[in-house]
Image (cartoon, rainbow, N blue to C red; front, side):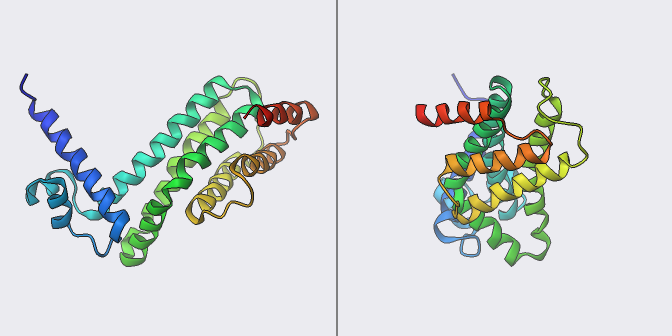
Length: 209
């Protein structure tokens, strides 16, 4: 069956994303050209501009896709896991998903350094992570979160910590232990410190892994 134009367009866009992503990781932002991307994708040069305004927009899409995958994993955990478990599991999944993508973080920093008007990319990426964390905290029906006024600041700080660890690859401990420390900070900040029962349950989860 012949492919529709929409299917062909999406296939071309995906080919450009894959080619651009691999090239940008290999040689960096400054040394990657649109011509190189289209050549690797085996597409005509002009097709690039049917899907992306410029290289920076392609980088933005790559970052968005990484963020959405991490958000999707965390949303599922928030939906199914109880109370403190959900925080720890969500943070652990978050670190596990974004830490291997250090090349993308380096790429983002290169873009911001080279293009003065690219700084909002960094702020926007952080918001992509903060927003679902904040929504999940406010929406949970089990009263895990108090109505404290620092919830938004907490979501931003926890995200900043995780993104720093992911960008630098410099975790203070294993991903499991780092996520546990962040969970303790989280729970203390919202006025619901982790109980002995919570710790025992997390210890059992550590042992199961």
